[in-house]
Structure formats: structure tokens, C-alpha cells
Amino acid sequence: YQRRVREDVKFLNQVYTSMNSNQKELQEKLHAVEQKYSQVLTEKEKKIAEQEEQIRDLMFFIEARKTVEKSLSADEVQDGVVVIPPSPEAATGKTKKKYKNKK
Image (tube, rainbow, N blue to C red; front, side, top):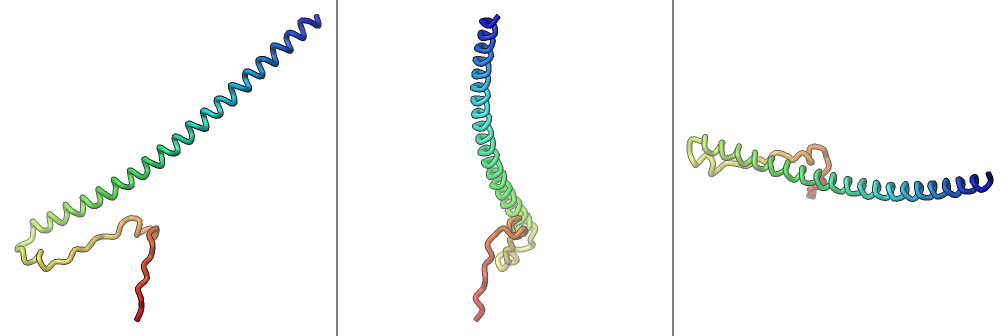
């Protein structure tokens, strides 16, 4: 009877060791996947921000071209002033502020 109990204890210890090893391995894999996901997410967010800026620039160009095409004469455009709307970052206050020198 004791021999059987010792064999069972030995078997259970092996199972425990194997399961513990598997758990550590899976936790390491999970950590690696989480890091990769975070990196990919950051890259995608950066790419989306760049594309939004490109779309904004393109829309400005299209609107400017439409305005030029609708103008009655080239003189109106020649003396015109270009006004660039503030970027979304400027509206949220994330850009650096520039201070004017008062004289």
C-alpha cells in the first residue's frame, strides 16, 4: 500500500512540475504577445495620425483649387491671402506655444 502511495506522490509531483513549467512558458508567451500588440497599436495610431494630416492637407488643397477655379479673374488670386486653419493639435493645446517679444 505504501509503495502505491509513494508512486502516486511521485507522479503527482511530476504532473505539478510539468504544469508549473507549462504555466511559466505560457505566461512568457502571453507577455511577448502583449508587448507586440502594444507596439503594433502604437504604430497604427501613428500611421492613422499621419494619414489624417495628409487628408487635411489634401482637403485644403482641393478647396483652394475650387476657390481659384471659381474666381472671376487671376488678379483676385494674385493679391489674395492664404489662411491655413489650425491643426487639431493646436485646437487641443498639445503644441508648443510661441511667445512674441514685446518691445
